[in-house]
Length: 465
Image 1: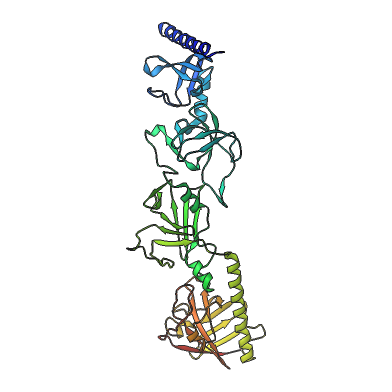
Image 2 (image 1 turned 30 degrees about the horizontal axis):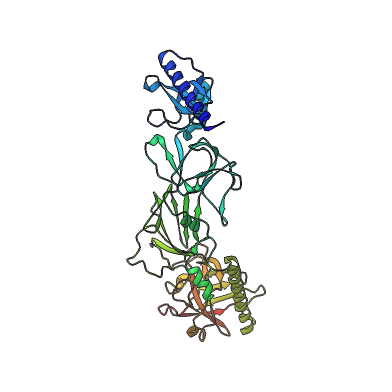
């Protein structure tokens, strides 16, 4: 068929369409069914989800002729892809009910080249390529393949969608924003105009407090502050971020992520995240000191910011190595007792001691302790003050001493009472008939013990088998 014949055919189709429209306008036409508009008809009050009478279907011009009951029966043409045809109005109503809240939902691409695929997975044939800012109509929320960046699952859902040229396929919502036409404006967005690479960087890595790197590099791991439960954790399914710290836990719920001045803001919460590099982020949920100090590795109660990093190496290996070191230190402690005085331990390896004031301390090789008569000691010396009943808990040999203390003290241990109070750190020196204890001064996590609390003095506990 030559170009002249093609033009004649198209002209004839247009004429036929016009004749049909004129005839429909001049009489009471017969409906061929009811149509559900999948996409809003621009310039009319016919929004997506509206049910309209359908009078004609033309496969030549690929249009439906529909009536607009809200506009005094005005008749217009709409593309075939823009409408689903049903024999009865009740059937069309059932389809609207099935669509539910999706009836007014569109998805908008926030980057160029996003694919619409044949199936809801990441390997199926691409049936359409979206331009940046192009919309598709959401028709169905479907179960599809989980998508990952590294080992982190990407947040989002698979939708069956309709493109503006009538192509049907499936899109994943991670790099798209939601437009709800029923609200009259664009609502808060799950993925606002943010840098997708920044989001990938944030959600694809396991972030830990910045002090982890220092502890690992200097081999000064403190397991009270170095644990798999501490870190910055994202739950994309429930749209939550958790910040887990020693002694504190914060959960931030969000429904939007926007970007401003280098910060990712998780609205409506106060959480803000700044990517400082490939392996460092600054997380804030309140004010940051003026100048954003370089060293934010530490954290204390009341702070509203913390730096997180991707630590080098395997945390589990580091934790196991520190646990083994502590176990070895405890064995060395009890071996030293046996070497100093064979009668220091009973037949079960238990160390029993008593101070001049009558306070008694027992240590088990299993890592437990019992302390009685703490009220007879200077206030602040025992793990808990003013206790006249027995205290029980665990003993951990994890302290490392600074060189200036190592000449006078053999080592150190920490006591944790079962009541859950803060730990109490002690230095010890083993004699022939006694063990001398002193309270260590508090130090920052991952630091060497460098002093004793001179206000409390040193107390001798005699072996008392």
